[in-house]
Length: 260
Image 1 (cartoon, one colour):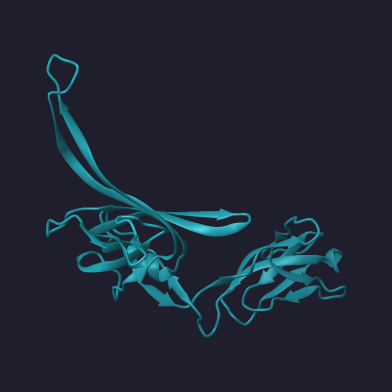
Image 2 (cartoon, helix red, strand yellow; image 1 turned 135 degrees about the vertical axis):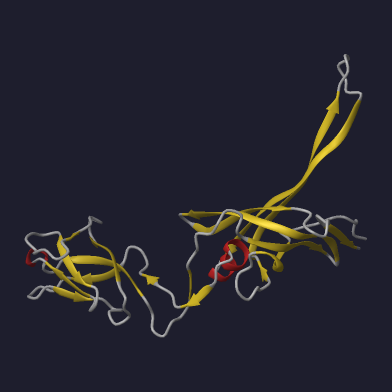
């Protein structure tokens, strides 16, 4: 028989923007935290001690209580950031950037020494540098100036045409740039600069299921704090955020429920 109260694994975190409080994003949408790695929940309290002339306290009492924690997850989206963190809406249309170290090309060996990037038609384009493939050294964008030496280039962002100096003929280069797909294939989130205090309030369900039983905490009033984004050379990117719960207008800071 399973021992009651055991939990195993990362658990599940489900978040629901509260439409009646805070500053929810347009069309409040419940979301799960994708590919969750761990959940931390601390039900804290300040212990106040009363001392007389002796070394040991004659009494203690509970002062302020807090609900704090964090969770680490691997799957993020503009919708999640909009709904749970910022309260700003998303719009259709994304900007895509080439994968590092960039789009591989060779400068033509003859005039006009131009390269048209693959996504030239998906304007607006943004130039993010050109580097030599064999050394990684960056070339210099001369803007509206003239090409006078090796290691220089200019770009027409309305046509996606990169032009190089004749001394770079046949050079292998990586071109880094962004483009806007048409038709739009994703979302864009533009964060606003709001007054202090602005941000969504969410209800957070933390569930720890195990072999038909488990434990859950329902936090009806939660604010999410920072998002830490941690990349690794040979591993997945992980996102960590902290949160803090409070009693709210209904006076209920949390509800704990347990199944056997």
